[in-house]
Image 1 (cartoon, rainbow, N blue to C red):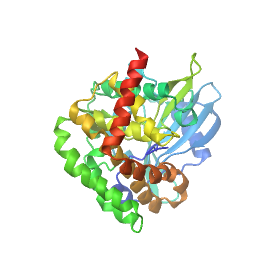
Image 2 (image 1 turned 30 degrees about the vertical axis):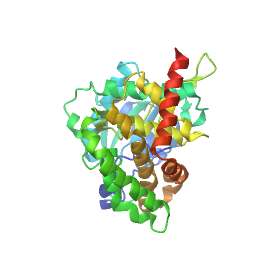
Image 3 (image 1 turned 90 degrees about the horizontal axis):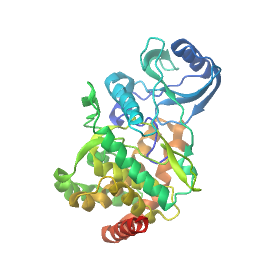
Length: 372
């Protein structure tokens, strides 16, 4: 999963301060939680992959399928932030996008703070039971131009709807030092030493410099919004449609929601779709066309799309290496996106801004012409 990662929303500083934040509930504990909190009887429980939260597929004897999501102990301290994320999912669902919703507990609340010892002392974890959405991840489908177009269109619709959210704890998603926000690209400088001896280190440093000297001066012209922040190949579900293609059937993982800019969501989406495509450079055109069918870019946003995609590649290359030091048992999952970035970042850097933009913007225009 590209950058993806259900639950990778704590800052590195927070994780380093307290390494053992990831829940480690066993199946009997999950069974007990579901019975006690929701008065449901689990018939099947399966562990699902995650970054620093813990997720379980749960089928219940009463009928129905769910995802039990147990938030890491660090983020569980920020109840307001999790409340906003949960509300955002419901708000999108109410406005026609296929997002999960939370099942109320027996007390009528959408989450419960549970204290548990997972092997390194008693800690508190927020627990939610979310609806299970149909479909397979977009990473398992063929990324046709039409599906990429729909992905870009959905990303833009999502951010426009999120911008209408009104919630008493909305300020909780400001997240000034959130390490995965593209606004915080310069924070990567703290971790470039993890690439010592790797030729990619110079590319990463050059991209960070480009961000500070080229993107930052134009940022005042970016349009602000609320970002999903991780619209990637494992957080998008699809189902076959009536035209032998696919339609988007689910949007997952709102753990990276943050106050950002529309152009950030588009850059993240393009980067993540590139990691799953046999000809990555071809991804940008149809995704961009889909996005602009809803929300056309202004000149500053157009000018910064390429460097922001590079910034996301740098984040996905550098940050998992830090997390691997903390969670060596989760190396395979942490490296899912980083492996592709090793190849794609230098390729994109060597092609250069002019050539990449030519491909993206010309193919976007051609795609729109074909749809007319």
